[in-house]
Image 1 (cartoon, helix red, strand yellow):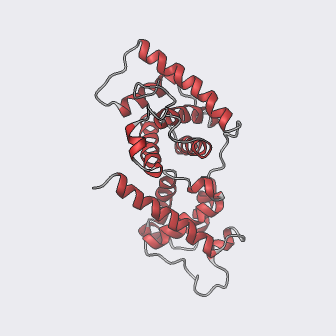
Image 2 (image 1 turned 90 degrees about the vertical axis):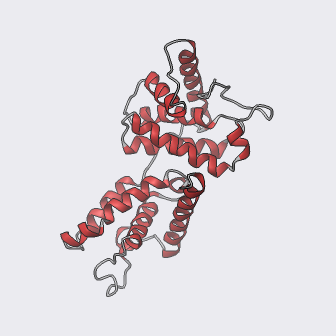
Length: 250
């Protein structure tokens, strides 16, 4: 049983209409947004939210979106992430919140449907673990971004740093990357540096003394990062924002 009320797996004759008609990237973006909303309602921290998204995206790197219901996999990823990040949350709460997010006008009462959904998530958790070969820990860019931003802030005077809102923008960009596979496809220090580089562009800010230095500011943080790598990651992040406009047109 899925959170929509169907089976967890699908066949060619029994596919979610949204999945069959939309591109996989669009579906994954919308389901990632569902993870964001559900995690926020569950009051899960940013690391748990990030792990849930990573587990979801990793699963669909191994499996077809046509074979397993994406919202059920997403709900399972949230539940598994709460264990991985030791922010333990009751299965009943995860099921209730995810179901209500998908069905805002329908209250999930205690009864057969609730018990079936709990059983589905429990079984699906084993499926995720098996498909991911129990590789469920995540090295997120968060710790790198926090360290790099602190070091970068020392180069600005306090008023200038606060006026540019570089840190807030970089954190927002990092959060948004989990709508896609940026954090799976690139090493964490590179993602962190790329988020800062894009934030600097968006804030129209320049790192002080960068013109006079032979070494780019990001190589002080991580010497092996090349400019073309940063450009590639930024392009992928910009593509995600373009995808958002297609998924949620204003």
